[in-house]
Amino acid sequence: LFRYNPAVGASAFYTTFSGCTGLTAIPTDLFRYNTAVGAFYNTFSGCSSLTAIPVDLFRYNTAVSASAFSSTFNGCSSLTSLPTDLFRYNTAVSAYGFYNTFSGCSSLTALPTDLFRYNTAVDAYGFQQTFYNCTGLTSIPAELFRYNTACLSFSNTFYGCNKLTLRSDMF
Image (cartoon, rainbow, N blue to C red):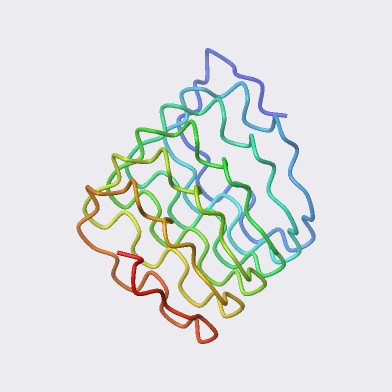
């Protein structure tokens, strides 16, 4: 769909599929030919029928950095799980990189331990409101943020997650 065109040189997919309430699936190689893309801000925001995310969706998008995944899946209320290696190849993600990323994903009940394992450059407010109002979350893996030692704030990361049982060893 988005084969790289050197004349155009896509650098972002801001709100590309935002509000596509009938979208139920995403092709694995959707962004494969867009290796210079630096941000996916709001790309699938409001896709309330989306049920799964392909594990290698962002595999070739290694240029992604600050504010990279802000609100990317915000309001995807039918997502029931997240792939462990979704952000594995996005090691340059930094400030505000995961701001509001999964906010309002109310059908998520658990998170994979290594979801952010390779995102060690996340600093400042990188995880602010990441899972805001994910009302279905019941637990968080102890090592979810183990490798994110540069992050300075987790403000409102789990705000509104009213079924969540907190771990004493999380931070």
